[in-house]
Structure formats: structure tokens, C-alpha cells
Length: 271
Image (cartoon, rainbow, N blue to C red; front, side, top):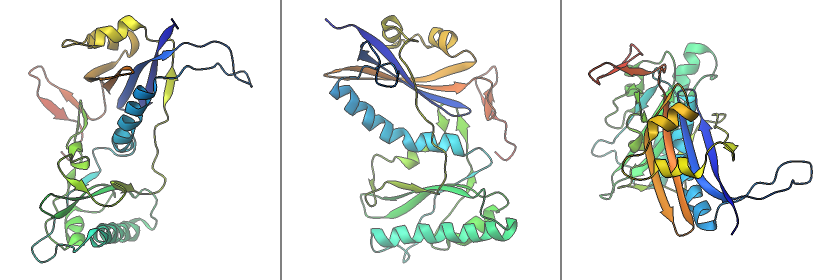
């Protein structure tokens, strides 16, 4: 029977980490050029990993590129302003972003520093709406509201807690049908975290300690991620094996802390 080892794939952002753990076949030797040959997971596990990474890509981008001083905006449509189709809804959100960008450029003389992520969604009843994260320093909430003009638009600063961006479910909305072939779009040049792969850190006992109803997150964090806290453990079993996803936040982070009663306090004064 072939030996196996636990692979750690880690996606780092300044205040958060997302970690995938799964078993791969242990292989020997080196590739041409001297690099160590790496084992691969089963096809079932790889398919599940691909699906999970596709679903989490947006959260990785948001956590790496946006901060509490940036804005969350959820424009909706008033009666009589609802777009007729997907193309019209997409055009509305792009035109809105362009108007906000013009305000930003007028303030700063350049578009450098202007960033956005948007999702356009359609509910089961056929109503369109949008979700945006925008980094546009100096643009007021009033200007953001006036730039929409098709209904309600209530901007607020982004909030982060131990699970990352608060309200991130808006960008996934499993009960809604997303518009078009792409679920979301973003400005050019946004950074994306590169995966860091390690095949020697974790052992099978570590993986076993994270499965079940009471995962040993404190020991794993102290051993492998000192200064960080594991806030969530997700286990998925496939016919080809099991993988574990950890979500980790920096204990002494720049965004929030908890008092002795467990109440959250945000460090950004705008919240």
C-alpha cells in the first residue's frame, strides 16, 4: 500500500489565512530541473478542492484588497426602474461604478487607488440587485447614494470579524440566481493570494484531531500558527478521501478585538 502524507495549501492575507488540508500519495525522486516531485490527491478530492477554491476566490480577493475604511454598497431598484434583462442590469452597475470613479478622479486627479468588486443577482421573483465593495477614499456616502439614482443605495463601511468580511454571504447568495456566465467582476490589478504548499508540516494525527464534533483547534493553532486563532473548521468527505478547510484570523489584528464579555469592538473609528 502506498504511503501518504498530508498536504497543507495556505492562502495568506494580512489579517486572515485560509488553509486546506488533504492527503496525497507520497512519491519520491525529483523532476527535471531538480524540483521535488509532489504527489497528487485523488480525482474526487481534487474536484472538490477546485469547487471550493472557485467559491472562495472572491473572499480571498476581498480580504487581501479591502479594509474597514472601504465601503459596502447594496443598490436596489425602485418600482419602474427595474432592468428588463441581464444585460441591462449589468450595464446599470457598470455605469454606477464609472460615475463613482469620475468623482474619485476629480478629487485625486488620478484613478490610482480606486478599486471595486461587484456581484449582480436576480432573485427567484425576477428582481435584480447588486452588491459592491468599493475603495474610493474621499468620496462621501452622500455622493455614493446620489450616483446610483435608480432606487435605494445605503453605503456603509466594511466590517470584519473572526470569520472575515461581515455580510460576505451577500456575495454568494445561494438562494438566488446570479446573472450571466460570471457571478462577479472586479477592477483590474487586484492582488490575489498565491497558494503556499507544504507536504511536511502536518501529520495524519493532526488531521484526525480536526475531524469530529470537537476539533482540537487551539492545539493546532498554537503548534502551527502561533499568534493566530482558528475560527472555523469545515470537513468534506468524498469517495476518494477527506479534506479540511480552516479559516484563521490574526489574534491581535488591525480590525477588531473582543472584550472579556465576548463583545466585539472595531478598531476603525468609522464603524
